[in-house]
Image (cartoon, rainbow, N blue to C red):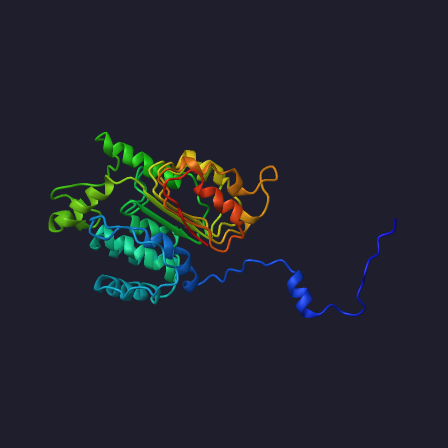
Length: 319
């Protein structure tokens, strides 16, 4: 039996061609896009005074709040930093001089502002983290938060392991960072005795585990993924350049309350034996999960329906 085929003479109308083309996810990277990509991650954090408050439900299209005085001052300082000569070394040098005079929550705010305005180099991040050059065991986060955007360097497992080692050493009362001194001794190039509040807040910061990680527009290798600490409660893996085994995350990070997988087009493609990445996730193992973001990922409603199967309280899904 011969199958009849209908062909059309002449060129295909533009409307037909547009409908036949599969939709593609386009990401225009820039400050506006980075602000959108990180908006949900930042919205889930607590305030700057360590007094927990109810975490708001994500509203990506709401207007941002007006900046406070600290944010306005930091914006001016960071604009001055970027306006010196635009070189990475001068930016890192400026941040190294500025960081000792900033409280930990102000350094966290500075990292957030830079993540949106213009991603920092590794040297700039280390300056705001409080990393001492040549030392081992320095922590890689500020107030338990680590934000890495568009890194020119490879995200390695050591980025997370160093933070875990340092937290373990502090818990057991060990000297995890021999370069840090107390009392009237000098801390770097400035005197701790004249700035007692800096020493006290830094000691409190060292006791905090890494609880929040955001990796945006980067390549995250499987060893680095498996090095994520189990203390994480917020995780954003946004616009990664290559697929990752998401189904390994429930075992590595069982305490997650917020997970953002937005702008990852590979979530809509088969991987690892023909299954899509979210189809292999055991969602029931995330007992504390409250918010899941999958913006512009091409995931199906069936995949998202499985997230709330067997739950007493539904997870808020942002698409």
